[in-house]
Image 1 (cartoon, rainbow, N blue to C red):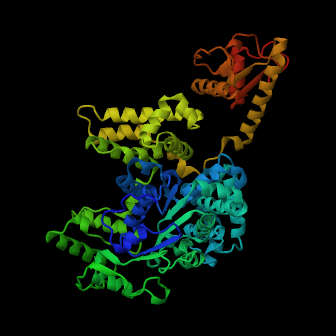
Image 2 (image 1 turned 135 degrees about the vertical axis):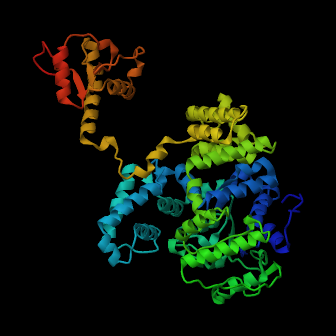
Image 3 (image 1 turned 60 degrees about the vertical axis):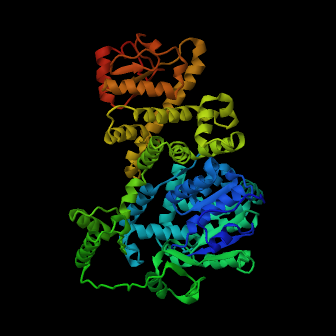
Length: 628
């Protein structure tokens, strides 16, 4: 241990004891408002600064990507640029990186993709509609319930039965056809990899010396098994949880994992491996007392009265009964207006609802009443890839304008623009070769220096790195333009940051791979045979020709460009830009040669139009056999 100071800011005695605990597996029981995020961030800083842990060997597991970014930002405030090398993300992201590193042993495709909700929702919605009567009879009243049930089956929580067996087989076949995994597969495949390959598990723990887990009470059995196996193999575990706040049981979360963790790693207060944060800084005493009163005391790790509040106020909690949702909204609006008129800040007011569907009507009524508000339903839009990229870019712009450090916002932006494996290699390079530099500086070095790029193992990513660097620098230069409005900049940024494929995601289930169509497969076979014939007959000096025909000249021109690339014909002398013609040869040198013969190949999607064209041009005249 280093002798450097451990005087972290704003820590009470309970928090400080948790932050500076030993390297044995630790559990921190943290109720609402007790400072669990502060403790988690300070523990990470403590491990880096005082346990001399290499940042890239520290994993922070959070429930959402947003939480991971917030933890990284706060950690940067404590340890500086080194925080950017910490691997912060969801457990699914951790599993993704693990499988990418060992695809063969994990029995997953080398280039697997992870399907998103647009694909899985579309599949199960269609399956539900085709089997609605069976679903209703089995208490599955929506495709979302079917999807949740399937997730629980894959995680080993529920058993599959009836028609759902066939549905699950079809679903797995759909994923296999795409070379894809879903989020449950990431967990199950990683669990199996760690269980079946001890040497791989040992290698992973060598790269992952410490695992800090937020919201541990929301882990499901497979997630618990992954974390447990890492700890048993020697990784330091530090889990923060509150058994009173497990709200994802319907997804398979198991608060009982807390007891299993305590029993497996012998976490006790006497050993200094179990800590309870006992001061609530968020609520007054009356609010906490009401909340605590509805919790079953026998199942809790905290006992009634363990938690004290920094605000001892006991103003009574009022219960108001309304006849219907409309009357409830009317009351809420009136109460909000009264508080605002009394001087309350809007940001200090919150309205909680049991169902998301109530939020839309409440938001509408608030806006009509002139009460600015933000609902949790807005998160779906803000979590789309273009919006996340734009948000990260605006954070960079704001930091530059305020002359603040760019480390955290620039790292976030890079994480949205570069693939995960590229980011992992970039972080590793920065940690090895430029430990005192920011990730942005390491990125610039890799872009500009061939030797650095080779050292980072990013030779094959040169084009992507150059494109990303150009995009960022161009956009930042745009901010210097006189008279630039935020609207104009946003439109420009979205055009450059947007992913055109996102436009197709909602149609992912109805779109088909062109290669799956019989006519396209047949065309592919013909092209392969033509390419082989080219090589075989070139020595005889009379190789077959390939003619591309479409009655729309622009499409013919496009076809020729695509075919030349697909067949590696770009190694020919550069092809001149073809004229707008209904039919074009793949090789420009074949133009003007006498009529087509039996060995030549023609690709068209309209035989009648081809014959009319041939009649006009004499393309088949003088030949006893028509081309293929």
